[in-house]
Image 1 (cartoon, rainbow, N blue to C red):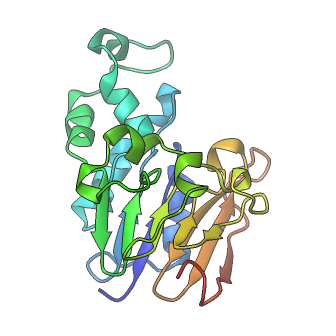
Image 2 (cartoon, helix red, strand yellow; image 1 turned 60 degrees about the vertical axis):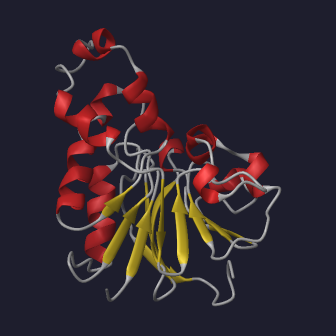
Length: 219
């Protein structure tokens, strides 16, 4: 694989994701794209994003589940059969997201939606932590064999400037607040570049920016 790319917490902004991948010249089959969960939001109009994620995985991307996907799978079928603003949720979407793993180790990184709990072996981590942990992960770091790339907690809550990627000791937080009208970000971990676009209603997905991150970040 020529590059490892990662994106998280799309929350229905599939057009933004498409534009970022185009800006990065993403090439399925050559680049390895890691998708870190929360492709949808509670609003049913975001749920077709699952189809886009499935398309990307069919082309070679690797996707893991976030807390929004586990929430959707936990809903009674009756709640999914009818919504005020959408048609019934196809059962194939549920079947697909139920197959998604909760973490992936790829080359020099561990990819997870929310984080891991200190002192517990990776294979014994609870699904609720992998998809939902917050301060107990990023405020209590412990040595891991490789940097952890995660989403779930918007980076402004981690202390990063609004809409920016967060770098901590052995960690990279990449939820740059797409859900909150801030930015959606795609990381090129191989070349240490960040592609980013606005998700503000006044400037959806434009302009796209590209910057480098420090070589010592998250080592």
